[in-house]
Length: 73
Image (cartoon, rainbow, N blue to C red):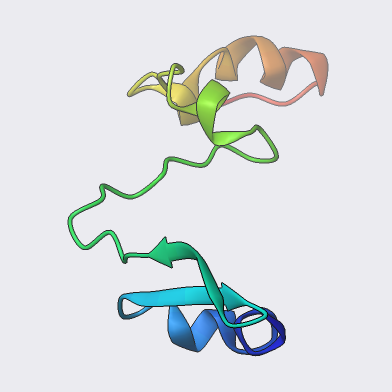
């Protein structure tokens, strides 16, 4: 159990069994074909995966924002 805790980032690249006092308690298997988890800022993955960022996000309301700062776009 202690080895699994200290070596986890190295161990998860292959299948292994975790034992406690010599008794197997868990089998860890790497997920090789998992899609990347979308991240949007600090949102948890389960929330971020339901959100969509519009294609024009960087330009949204740019004219209104420029007006607020007294500049022209």
